[in-house]
Image (cartoon, rainbow, N blue to C red; front, side, top):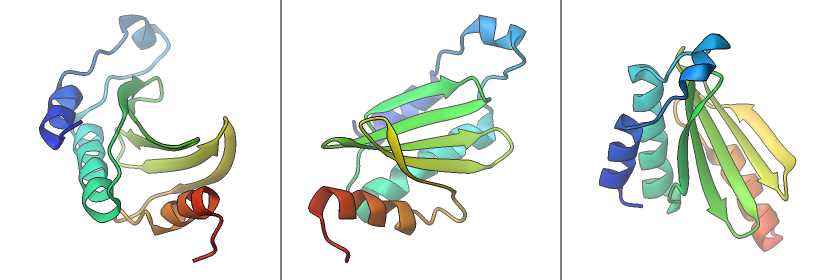
Length: 119
């Protein structure tokens, strides 16, 4: 998915109306901007392309970057927080909050598991 396609998808996210009844809010500008910045950072620094973009019931944006049998899952929230998970076959290998778009720890886990190295 090109960055232009990413941007278009982010600005055209479908928010299920029944989630409002559960107290969720659609992604706001902060969540959408942070999601786009995450995609740009991961693409330019680590050559990772987003494979799935959706709304979350937690009031934000859900991004998935698939790499072989691993997933890097990012959620950007309306309050500006960014959370990340690295999963393998639905098992959580790593999770943390992201600050200043520093994905180095989760990328290390992603690469170590994929290549079996400790570099």
